[in-house]
Image: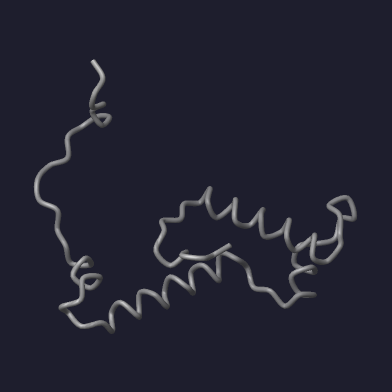
Amino acid sequence: MLHGSETFLVRRENELALLRAEMRMVRQICGVKLSDKVACKELKDRLGLADVVTVLQRNRLRWYGHVLRKDDSEFVKKCMDFVVEGVRPRGDQRQHGRN
């Protein structure tokens, strides 16, 4: 579920979707239905799981530390200091091939 999560952009709606998906999986693993009204925290404590958003943040920080330890000549490290020149045009992107 979090494969490659170190590098992708996560918005609030993405976090909420991850939390909902995680809880569906946790309920299925525990054999509990939503109608049983068992608290999410209790189910996570049974399995010894941390919150998926916390794990995501931990993974991203671990990746950031990995990049910081790289040599300055590495491509990934160079990308951190890259400055895009020019001005981005206002409005939607132009649709190529359409009139």
